[in-house]
Amino acid sequence: MSPHFDPIPGAAGYQHSNPPVLSSIPLIAHLNILKRAGGIEALREKSLQLTGYMWDLLTASRFYIAPEDVHGYTRVGFRILTPADPSARGCQISLMILPQGSHLMEKVFDKMVKQGVVGDERRPDVIRLSPVPLYNRYTDVLRAVQVFESALQAVADERATMA
Image (cartoon, rainbow, N blue to C red):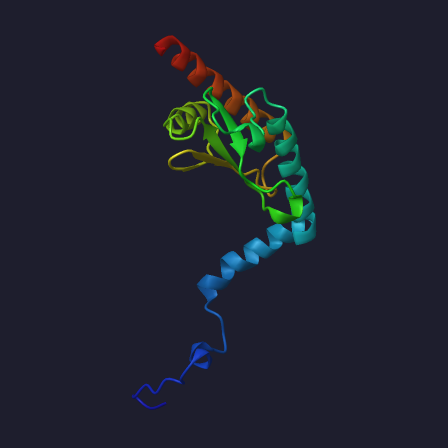
C-alpha cells in the first residue's frame, strides 16, 4: 500500500470489504430479536393491531372531537391528525390538543409523564403516542389512553375553576 491516499470518486469510494466488528454486534443482536419476534411482517401486523386499538379507544373518548367539529371549539378536547387509513400510518398517532393555541398541551403532557406515560410533544399543540410493537402490549395502550383522558379531565377541571 502506498502511504498516499487516493480516494475513489463518488459512492464507490465508501465501499469496504469487511464491516467493522463493533458495528456488526448490535446488528446481529437486533436480527436475533427480530427473528424471535416472528419477523418484520409479524411486527407490522402487531403494529397495525396496537395502533388500531389505540385509534378505537381514542375515537370513543368523550374528549375526541371529529375534524368537522373543530372550528370554533372552545372546550378541552383533542382531534386526531394521523390518517384514518391504517396503511397510511406507522405506529404513532398525533393528537392535537384543543382549543388550538391554548397552551394546554404542555399541561396535559406533564400530567401524563407524572403518571408514567411518555409520548412525544410537538409544540404548540400536539402530543404523539406510539405503541411500539416490539415491546408494548394492549394493556399498555389501554393504560396510555386512560392516562391521557385523565390528564385532559384534570386540565378541563383546572380551566373551569379559573373561569
